[in-house]
Image (cartoon, rainbow, N blue to C red; front, side, top):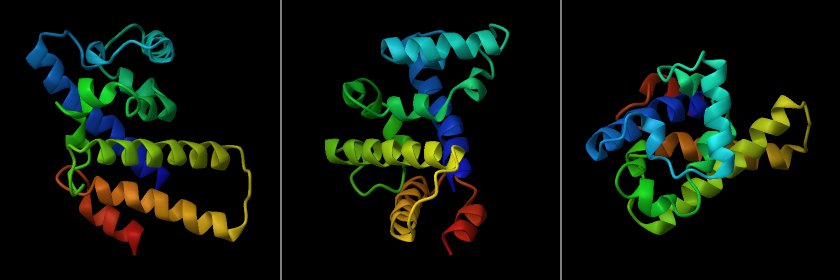
Amino acid sequence: MLGLIEQELRKRVVITLSSLASEKGYPTWFSIIPPTEVLKRSIKKALRRNGNQTDGVEEYLSFGFWRRIFIGSNYIALWIPALHLVFPALVNPLEKRSFDRVGTHLHRASQIRNRVAHYEIREIEDYEQEKSVLKWLIRAMDKPYAPIGEIETLLH
């Protein structure tokens, strides 16, 4: 489930921010992201790892990078004009509450991802709660981009 979420975020964020960047006259999708120090460092490192090529740079960005796009002032700068499209199944996608909920769930997914990557085993209660967070994100991303058969298989 974590892999599906990360793959979909990479694909969808790049698609939506590319459209917004083009509309606003920016040269790349990541040029439109407000430049916090952490995000600038992540992009610079990803560009270096990608041979300073902008095409495909998203493959070198960590899950933490994608999570950080959905916090703070990015509600006005990115969510309203574009990023709400990444989660088409949200009931009221343009509301601040929806943005905050996505941010909270992505933060939790990032914690889960890091815990799994470091083989930190937890109690079954945590597992069920973590599974519900990941399912929520997958359902919120359901349609039009998601590979529906894959999502249905994961959720059942």
